[in-house]
Amino acid sequence: MTNEPFRPRRSVLYVPASNDKALAKIAQLSCDAVIVDLEDAVAPADKISAREKLAGIFAGRSRSREMIVRINALSSEWGNDDLVAAARCEPDGILLPKVDTPRDLLEAGDVLDDNFAPDSVKLWAMIETSKAMLNIGPIAELGRDPASRLSCFVAGTNDLIRETGVLATPDRRYLVPWLMTMVLAARAGGLDMLDGVSNDFRDLDAFARECTEGASMGFDGKTLIHPAQIEAANGAFAPAAQAVAEARQVRDAFALPENNGKGVISLNGRMVERLHLAQAEKLLAKAAAIGA
Image 1: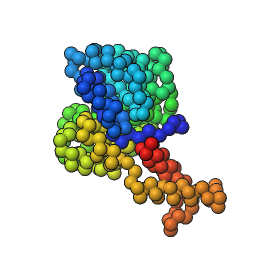
Image 2: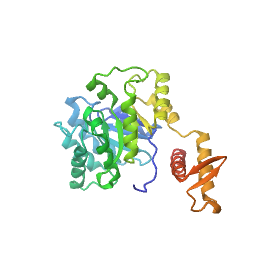
Image 3: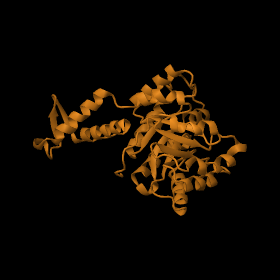
Image 4: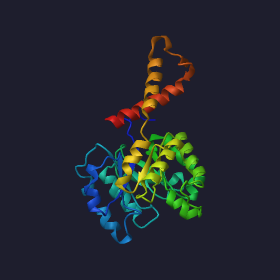
């Protein structure tokens, strides 16, 4: 994988490209990333005008947080034009909805290459269809090839519920197997994995519980639909102080001269391997990025 600086994605807020008031507030928000949305949050009659706003939205933007564009599905009447327009803005990423197979990402990558989008423009993939779940292994494997641009999966839980008819419960019990499969596939492909949205932004206690559960399942962060959800997501997906302290101990122990080249060492009465060192370094990089 690349040696790019770590960027936290604890809280990733959808903002409709058609909502000027919400767009104006982005700079004041504490979310890690923003997804400028051309898809679900924009009515069909407003799709073209929303796309035409992209250049202005990205003009002179700060690089302090990631800015992503979610386009309409490439199979839709707006998708291809959305993709070209987004590429010209050179966002940090372009989120593709309704991804079913690896080919969907490869074809989008070809369009970016043909339009001379720099390598810094990554692809994010919504995992929100039955076909995506059945093909998730091969899709995730693209993450091991930098030429594919794929860097992140996003759970599209609302669409999965709608398509499959599975019962939506507060504890998401019937979604959990699919969510865990997404996390497993993302890790196999070296990708970040973001949890789906919580629709009731007024029930912040329930949202906080969902964030805690998502973090426990291994998600890197959560997609949000309202700024009121940012604080809970940032807290739940940030490394705990004790975990940071333990990670420092692991890193410092492996740095000792007597442990140079060792694959396994003893630390505080337990065996610690180099895989634990890699985990510790990733956690410390996340903590440092959040602190910065």
